[in-house]
Image (tube, rainbow, N blue to C red; front, side, top):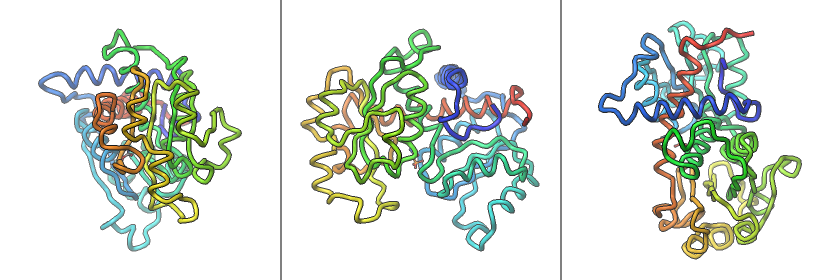
Length: 321
Ligand code: CP
């Protein structure tokens, strides 16, 4: 692997290699000294054209725990606000010797453009592009599922795919790169995925994808016997008013409220990538319950991103074809 741009084209062997390497990384994070020398001398640039809390800080923590030098670049306050292009920004990063670029961008396809452009000779990791993909989020979600469902140790999780797992993904799917990345990765790993949303919030083209499409959350919880219920954020910043039922109607029909939480099978875990709209797509009781993996997902994100950076930027890195 030279870049990590999406999960749609990520081979199962590569996905399992990242998840198993993340298990090794997680084991090192239990030690008193968490830092590894693996990427000493390498420079990782976090290039964020959109806001982020979890992804940015966990990529930064991951790179630092591998001893890389980290440069954080936010479009706000940079020369991007003066009109500088992605090409000129990339060439600037090339000039300072970036070995890896972690990019979040509002434009779907921006990380792929950077990777194929020839402007920069760095490994590119997609940290979320438009409504396209967020591959490290899906990998940390799969890692979390594997641990919760099969055992929180190497023996339980290592090498395991998600064959037979049922995942119900609920919310603003039309705008969700997390939903898309999870769909491709989870199906590659053998899980069955159901998308639940009002018709206006289903992704265009979903009926041609390997997913069961439903409009009723109660029907999905009854019919799909989910091992995983993943609630997604209503992305008001990307939303046209015509697409959205009013908030009370949304919470009543598509929110994971206290009643639905209580009715879930005992084994079912509740996931949310964050940030959450408490009281809208998820109640506080659901977000803070023992079934909830919200904070585990954040912690696991560091191990998964350490694994991705290690596999892309250490000595195992391949040269571009
Ligand atoms: N899950 C996620 O991408 O969160 P941030 O937007 O805070 O990075």
